[in-house]
Image 1 (cartoon, rainbow, N blue to C red):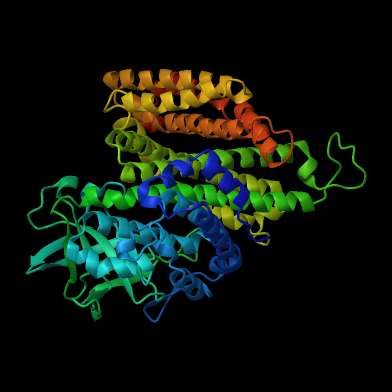
Image 2 (cartoon, helix red, strand yellow):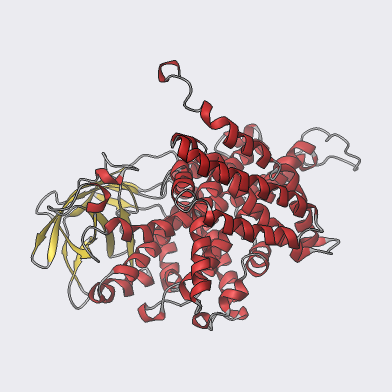
Length: 584
């Protein structure tokens, strides 16, 4: 089957969970009328269904490849990219000053959910280009902005982020790529790996953002600078100049997302690639985090998107596949396996967690809009605090769930899910990278615990949990309300334990970090489900009544895991390092 955007769910979450109205009330988004938002969502859904989804399988079976030294994208990719460029879609969240639409980030997030679900391998390209625009817009000089942003915003040029090297993966302190000053520019030399859309022929230029070291740079992460290194040099009038010494040496052969070219980039193999410094020297990692945080939220969105795609396919298959008589079935004639209790359990597990993820991710995006655009400093600060705490949950929890839900999709299909014929296996393969790139789940968990919890003694987490508690109080009359209150107490106890354990042995909170991230994801996800249930309160049938049932299911089957995670965190951390390495 193909993909149909879940527009009813998307609109419901935007309006009732993420607080789109609070965002569009900001003066900067005065143009984002309900009619315009409706039109954007409807048109994006058509692009997802009609343009991108039909190419998803093609990208898997006929992926990107090197042909005569050039990267050839999958059939149909070029035409699909032209659709986005012609419609100005890449510029949706950017300032009209640079040719963008000036619409909210949360609306862009909803659009990209549909496109990631329709074709994740393809949508990585606009995703990373938008991240590159954010970095240049935030830290570039006026000249750099004028030179690069207009065509990056429109999508006429694409962008990449170049961090990882063969000897520097998660440890960016080990970066060896060099940048040598030469007049008003720098000569860049070195190798970068795992560069998504590092090369292709869909556009006339690719703008690489590259981390490198100056000759006199201090050691470690404090000695990293950020450079713009275009595929083709750009003249002062915006026209293209000579080919830069930045080439794709090879493409990786991957488990999934075959349509996305993952390049090994060689800079300076001949004369040295020409680059220009972004911002101040030795602050490159700080600047790159603007792009990385965008990418982390966007990859979390991929977890949601691939889960939605896997769920839709599993549901369709379960309704069509007839196999045995379900236990307790009283209907006449044969029925699909959708009425087998365990298949229904799997589908409900998929559905409720998708709804929780969508609420979390859209809420995170809305907080970014408020943090950047509200006229009250206190509101901006509070929104930024919550956005910072949401980010590792969005990236870590949502991608782990995306893998689990894609796996459940295979299970619903049974043996037909394990073969490539149905396409369920592709979703499972495509999902696997999401917990790895842009920072593994452990990196997200360490960010949440070692940085954002321990550095302030858990104060930020308590602000977040107080926000969750306000929702639980409002939902006291619903089944999920009381259970959420109990889960909050467990989360507070775990926060206190982390702060205390760090003083005893720093390995204890590090070992508990991933379980704590999962616990917090489940708790904040429950808040989103409670908000949805409050909006649906009193409904007796149809779409809204379903929100009450999925909230109850989430409370009983997902939120109930918090107690076990709490025990694992507080009582189980010492056992992690207790066994001698030789006995592993």
